[in-house]
Length: 140
Image (cartoon, one colour):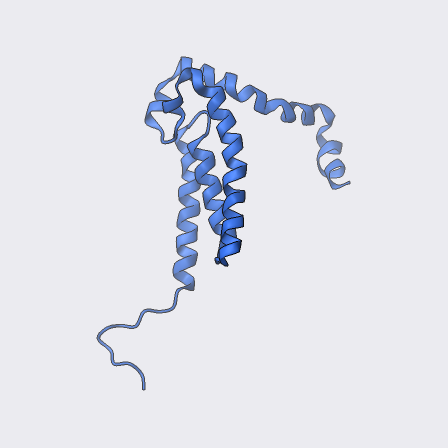
């Protein structure tokens, strides 16, 4: 019911169908970028450069496969081992996998993963116990 009220009523069925078929256009879009500006692939991080112009479909398939399987496998592993901060670790792993296998690796897309890393670091530093000053004597 929420899907109908929040999405279908305001924008309609045609917009939903366009969005549903949008991933089918990614491979052709990547081909156009390879033709028009191949320097995008050589200057940005990610694995798209190694797959080349003709390997975009394989890269896209690996993107979809690994974006779901690696985080799920990590969740199972982390829960069995009793690890903490599993949601943050899965978020970061998902971002790294997604951006490594993205079809067109525009450089600005990689800022997201870096910002998430900085936020996780800030949270970890905020939660860590205070480190005593080595010049002071311990409290008795």
